[in-house]
Amino acid sequence: MVNKQILKILNSSNFTEKLLRWYPLHRRDLPWRASRDPYIIWLSEIILQQTRVAQGLPYFHAFVSRFPRIEDLAAAPEEEILRTWQGLGYYSRARNLHACAREIVRERGGKFPENYQSLLNLKGVGPYTAAAIASFAYKEPVAVVDGNVYRVLARYFGISADIASHAGKKEFQALADKLISSERPDEYNQAIMEFGALQCVPTNPDCGNCPLSPDCQAKNRELVGSLPHKEKKTKIRSRYFTYHHIQVAGHVVVRKRTANDIWQGLVDFPLEEFTSLEDIISPRPENLSVVRELAPLGPVFDQATEQPLKHLLSHQRIFASFVKISIPENRKSGLEKWAIENGFQLVDGQSLEDMGKPKLMVRYLNQIK
Image (cartoon, rainbow, N blue to C red; front, side, top):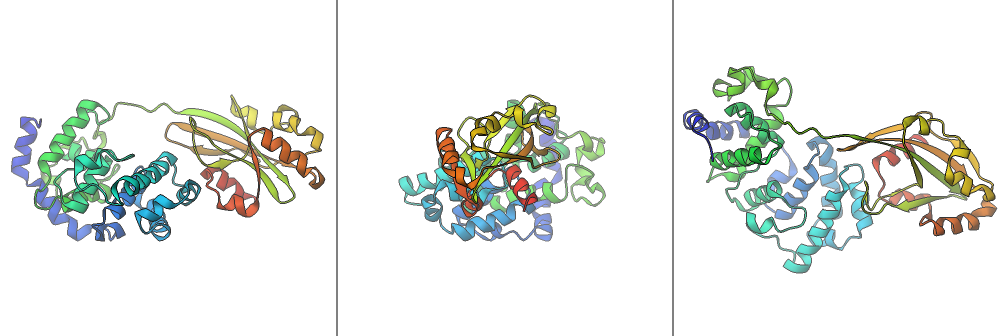
């Protein structure tokens, strides 16, 4: 339900028409905007979730090049999907992408649903992605609401509702649905998202050159810096890893990360987790259980990172040190036996390169090249 004050602003300001006039003059030339193929649109939207366009664009090109049709994506092994996704983070998106492709090929003959409600039934497709596909591919008048849209609407209409609350989300969605152009829903949705990305940016927007500024409640009431309003704070958890880079005869020991933790499905080195940063700075061999277990194989210990690497996730802050452990070549069979017993495997350098790895591990490997 849209309240009376907002309706009054809406009826007097031509908000939708102004956005539709602004968009052709300022839009970026992005490859997915030239397509009505739901596969291309879906792929771009999944990649761009929680990702800036500049960062996501190379990944979009890589996926389209390697998997030009949804059948190609569905047929690929998960390891190849994760390797192509490597560095984007939020790896559950990649796994859902793969699962959804397989579902569409298996159950729908490779054809996407053609309306918003049916799109919501796909794995990994929520209201925003379903609205994007429905409006861009099929011109269904359903409004997208993402971070950019929240910001534009909150500022222009002076809405102080918490965008993280259920009630706030309902209020913004109702307003967005009221604003969308029934004749040009695809262009309107692109326009308001583009306006938030380029004009009504989070900090220091150029209000002096904004076509919406005369009727913008946030500008007129000096609330630009405080809208949109979000109360919920994400609690960040710190974790402290020591990775063991175990080498023998051109091979290294790796493990595939399993469910119920970060980076599911990727590979990394055996690690030990500690409770404080001090525990992983200049770790001593005798304090590492892996080094003690490998003692009969005559390991040579070498601390490989002077300072722990830091990696930020949405809810976690990872600090990681790396130690190199070299095993004599004639003890390779002993190391292989230890690896198998502990759920690890030995791989050569090319195999490691081809595997999907956490960005943190890629940074380390690049440092030691």
